[in-house]
Figure (cartoon, helix red, strand yellow):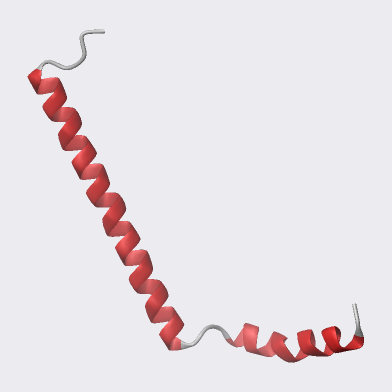
Length: 61
């Protein structure tokens, strides 16, 4: 590790502690919301498919 690496790390540390910009926070919120909706949708589709399979007759294994 050189002195330049250490100085760069010390300079960037306060910006990391300050947190992300509002734009990054908004984008993160949107991504989390989309992923959550996708998981819920997949769960509902799977649940309906399972219920339909059991109603029709299911597996005869």
